[in-house]
Length: 51
Image 1 (cartoon, one colour):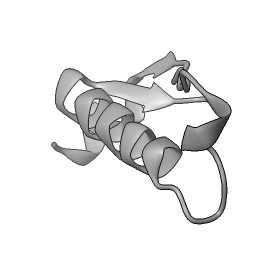
Image 2 (cartoon, helix red, strand yellow):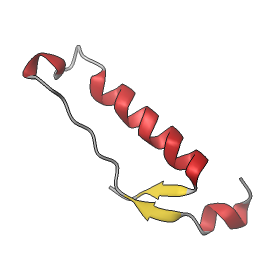
Image 3 (cartoon, rainbow, N blue to C red):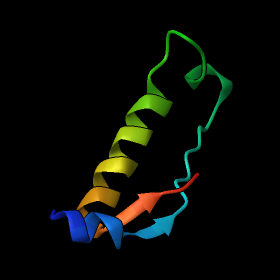
Image 4 (spheres, rainbow, N blue to C red):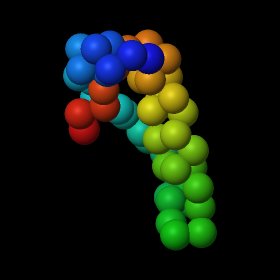
């Protein structure tokens, strides 16, 4: 992605969720994996995660 394309990326919101409390906590990585997947998709699609 060129510098120009990076500057022109569209803002977007990343949404993560969990189905149960057993998936949340310091020893769990569900949120980390979701955020990485969201960021990777945003980068490929030309979005900038704003929140």
